[in-house]
Image 1 (cartoon, rainbow, N blue to C red):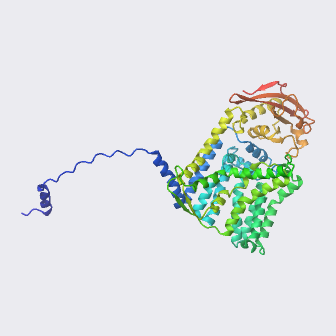
Image 2: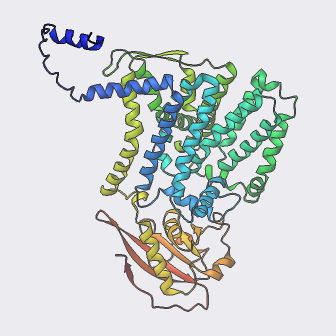
Image 3: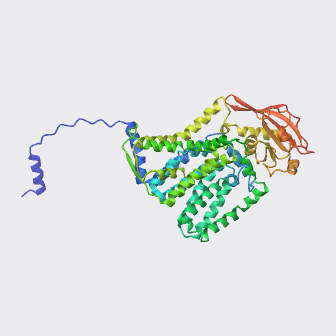
Length: 557
């Protein structure tokens, strides 16, 4: 019987001479961890994502930025100074306030109520405003210089000082940034499109911009100038669009305009209520100083772009070429004018008015700074030190929020004043409420004092009282002499401002005349071996019985 083919094949293999076995190769050592290699791969992956998947990189940037800064803000036991101001104003829900228009206080109060009195909702507003700003910067950038340029613009925006520690509080500057960017975006849509609805939306955005901060008028003036200069804009002058936008904006803004007239334009009086600068040269220096401060606040962008173009630097890596979209004349002029002219106008107004303005008032006008920088770059931009600039950028993104927490804690432990974020505001509020309740069966309805001290007490009291700011009826129109007589007030002041605690501070006496004070002193431990002495006065309405005799000195444990 013939063997099967398979069996014959097996037999053949079995009878074949054994082949020489090759010598075993020596075992290769497992590759060890290399930090330098990991670092290089991380930098390269960021640059690769910027070119191949910019939208995904944008989402990562926004997520990391939001998470880090929100964690930084909620790590403190109290809040920055401006946050108390927003809660103080927001409780009253007025059409305007003596320092600013009402939008940010309104949103602060609405968020506080919707989140069942969660105070940290204020920080959600702050960080959320910045993320919305990034979103509109990306939208404008995508339609003008492409997705890679738009993501690069957002990345550079993070380097501006106003997008650093100031974002830990929801102020008028932070609140106006997304509205600024959104207004420019909607204006562009209205001019380049033919939809009447875009002009209506632009009128709404312009009114909201003014409800946020009156500096928004500078942007509206720039957009009006741009409309006149560009042929795409001039063609709309014979259409209904711009005029409907003006009409819609004025109608929405009318309640605030009425309030301004009734208050004798109090916010503008406040803005220029500073010691005058006399003489041409000092006034010129005041304007230049403001502008130089803005350059300093943008130093991060300027330095990083310069470093990226300088060859033969450490950690530079292989050059990377970025292909950016070419913006039209309309878009380039729009972004550059919106980014630079409002700040230049403030510098000119500072010189003209002879008032030494704080540099921080420009913080609401810098939403397009990063986008403007990208538009100034060549269409084909070569990064000669890509790894170095990526390292610096990552250090700012990750290190600045952490460094801010370390700095505030170090400052609290130092020899200077304790930062507001580290102040035992809840303890002060609890102590003041206990003093009031020991004197009266009435609910604490009014706290009199400055923003800081009275703001501490009012925010953490339950229910929240109104604040009689500096005992000034102009600053606190919700307080009237009749209300004071009906409710009485708790007065609080720091001895660092008014040393004597056996009398009402002189600036408060005229407004509080007719109420009899019960005076006392309290020492509040601040931690870190520090303390603060306070004077207080319980001023009850007439015919209100007191519950206990006047204490001498109260010490809060």
